[in-house]
Amino acid sequence: MGRSRASSGLDFALKARVMEATDVRRALTRISHEIVEHNKGTDDLVLVGIRTRGAPLADRVANSIASFEGVDVPSGALDVSLYRDDVALRGPRHLESTTVPVDIDGRIVVLVDDVLYTGRTIRAAFDAILDLGRPRAIRLAVLVDRGHRELPIRADHVGKNLPTSAHEVVQVHVNEIDGEDAVLIGEVQS
Amino acid sequence: MIKHLLSMDQLSADQITHVLDTAEQLRSVTDRPIKKLPTLRGRTVCNLFYEASTRTRISFELAAKRLSADVINFSADSKSSVAKGESFKDTAWTLEAMGVDAIIVRHSSSGAPHQLARWVKASVLNAGDGSHEHPTQALLDLFSIRQHFKDFEGLKVSIVGDVLHSRVARSNVKGLVTMGADVTLVGPPTLIPPQAAGWGATISHDLDSVIGDVDICYLLRVQKERQNEQLFPSLREYAALWGLDSRRQARMKRDSLVMHPGPMNRGVEISADVSESPRSIILDQVSNGLAVRMSLLYLMLGGDRPDSAGTVPELSEQLV
Image (cartoon, rainbow over all chains, first blue to last red; front, side, top):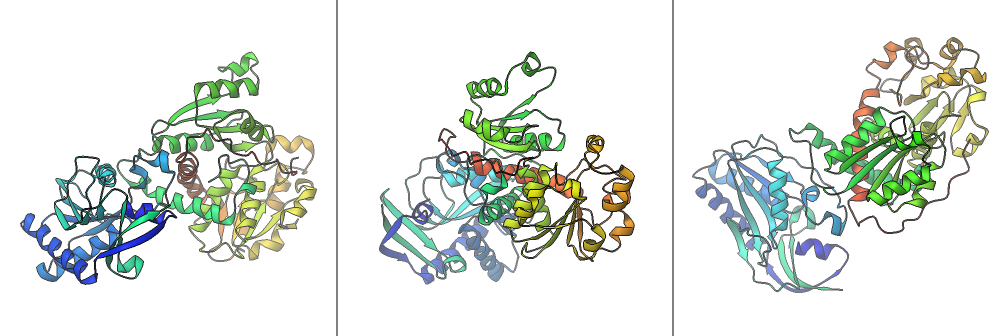
């Protein structure tokens, strides 16, 4: 949310870099271990990254799990634009592909996103996932939880809890899209 | 995105690409067990059809339903108030009073959608007006072409047949020229309008001289009711000179395609075996229509509530 608001043409004034590449790597490694520990193994796991920046993060968690468990957990990407509750308010968004490589019926879907904020993106993701099948459970892993929930949603695995004020913006940069791994906090200048 | 879609003149190459890219993503919904999206919940779309239609009306209806919009079908036949003499304007105002968000209109008069867009607050989508335009057909054709050819630039497309009365031809020429394709209109001189010289397409009266060089042979429906107007000698002679049969198709390049907007007159503009040959993407055109219309409804209705004025572009001069 914070990121997309900043990327919608408003100026982002940087206040601090709160995570660097090493911090992001360590956080994702820990999340990967937590997911496997919590699931008591990799059986039935499917990672689904929420477009845009959740998708590369899900792939990295999958790679990380492969490196210590020796198992390739399927990893996909979900575009939730068509399920958002603010389509009428904010207009049609650019659509990206939804690629979930396996049948999710009866499996454990771990949603992966960069920032958890109001919870509305995750709400949309629930609907999007349930239209693809009926998973046994949906869990949530996020790199940053910045608070300010508007819906009763919480993450199972969090890279970093980042207390923010509502007028601040959190930007996650990922190497695959932004050319670096970092978490930035700033303010929008209108 | 534009508020009304009345003519292909309104769309730039970038906008066309945006519509096709969005359609590409929406097409995948068709392959899922649950083929519905909640995106246009609470919106109402009206199909206002003053002319017969199968695929266009059904495709628009299904597109709206797949996006969770409510759909009203209005056909100007013996069961509607048009039979009691209600005017086009009164019908438009009735729909307006019911609070529809979009009106899909097909009308035998060129320019009717433009007129409608001036009367109502809803978005108007032209589903074919007289011999003027059929923009959603052109967009689904561009989408179908793009599934086979990466780039429109320099693509050789022949549009063959009754260009004079064809709204499909007008919209396709505009769309293809905008995208950079190299369009040739082929047909008897009586069926090529004199203004066609200004459309950015080449004109030919000899199908055999162009067929060996085309990437796409796009056949137009022969409007059989036009036979009495003496625009061509007979259906048999038309088929012999401008129809695509397997003998002519054999001269086409490898990887070239055959298209037709339907409904087909098999044995006239296209032979039965050509219509079912591997080169023919006629059924893809139909199924792609759904994704392209979903894309348009999403892009046009997905945003602000349609109470903004929205400019109605001037009608182009190319009316017959």
